Length: 248
Image 1 (cartoon, rainbow, N blue to C red):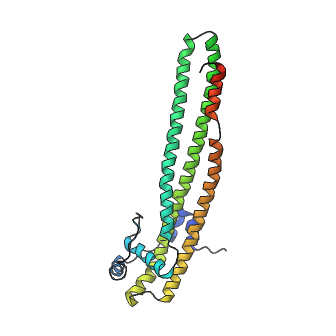
Image 2: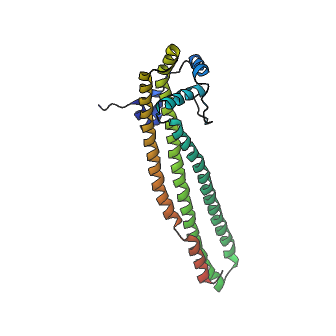
Image 3: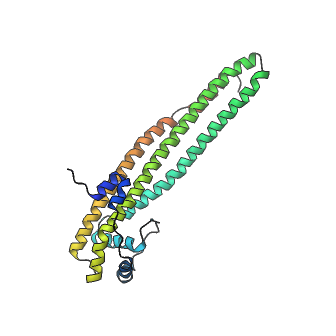
């Protein structure tokens, strides 16, 4: 049977986090360590649910003393991407809704004209409008595809961000008891404990890099889709139809 570390398990399936969630640390002991040994650490203001300032300072302390990669830096990058993706998604969603509403208004206006408009111009206008609306629908469909692609990337980014938070939580649980015991008994961290902490941090950093790589691959694939979608010359095609009809 293949052995799986709890970091791997949560990275592969975030819903299993509760099976690997760390035990609660002694908050009084953490506060004492914070006052005596970690007061000089100034952390970036990233709101992280479930992770307190002292717990974050423990990670920063180990990273600072061992040179291990800091998982909070990866989290900060993901958080920024998520906010921008949400903004872009809303823009495309709004664009699609406006196009769909405009198409509906054009159809309603055409239906209102039909009973009372007859003759040569009406006969030429109706097929031209039908072709125009077909292109309008195609344009709306392209915008909707773009919106759905951006939404898919944002969903993946949210999963990645949530998984990084879980991995950091597990890391704090893994290191917390060890570091608390070291600080309370020796007032520092021994080389052996530091080496163990560095190994844990390196493992988590590797899992976070894997998640980031997956997200970058998805973004690359979606970028190709969006380039194809935006390559349609729908507006030009609609104008061409009306130029031919002599109605513009």
